[in-house]
Length: 291
Image 1 (cartoon, rainbow, N blue to C red):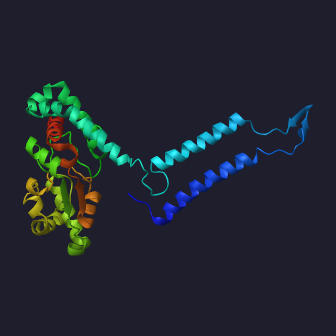
Image 2: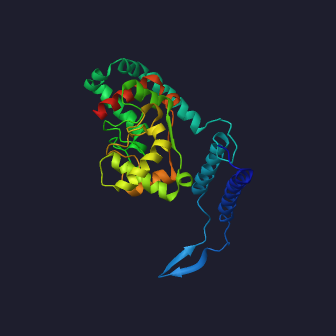
Image 3: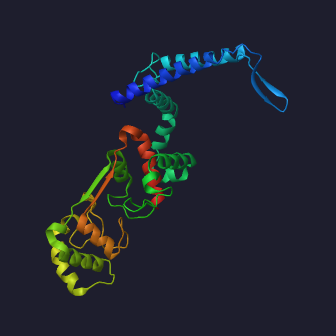
């Protein structure tokens, strides 16, 4: 990431001018008035007018020189790369490659286990847990129980399927889920009617007349993704609406909001970051977590 040309010159000139000003201030204070004291006295104590000690000045000058050498070698003067060509990104890449080379045999060994063996293997559980905490917990929570808009991975409700190969596909390629906004199509009246019908699918209190009218709208607008009975279609990522598990909340207000405004979810693909072996270990951890 590069900074703008204005900020580049601001940082570069600001740093160099500051160092020059510090050196000027240092040597300017080496001069004295030629008198023994400065004329300040308090309680019999006089302030002598002596120059700064040479050893102290030498340490300060040495520190400034060290700072200049650092700024020449490392990227510290605006957008200049530094003659050492060091970058934090490059260092991270080097450390990551060293880590991968060191642990690749372990990852390959654990990835060769089946799901049942992973559940029994202490190392597989520990590695899977750490992979989850480092890559997934920010969205799905420390224990995988999810947040609003982020699926619970610790239950048996998986929109895209919970078999090992299905979870691996989700981690490897990511998932994109989009529900269109229906407000402009079915209007507020239609939103209310479909909301009542969706409530009826899970056996909750609802308005029978509105639900009856909403079923017709549901069949036309919603069944293609959620199924004719509202039980979801895993291949399309259409959630089951007939149970009590809701990604964005299952009360009438949240259901109406989902219908009215639509929903969009995005899980990033992890193949380039984790590789196949770690994806397999993580998927095995999630299969066992959901059980």
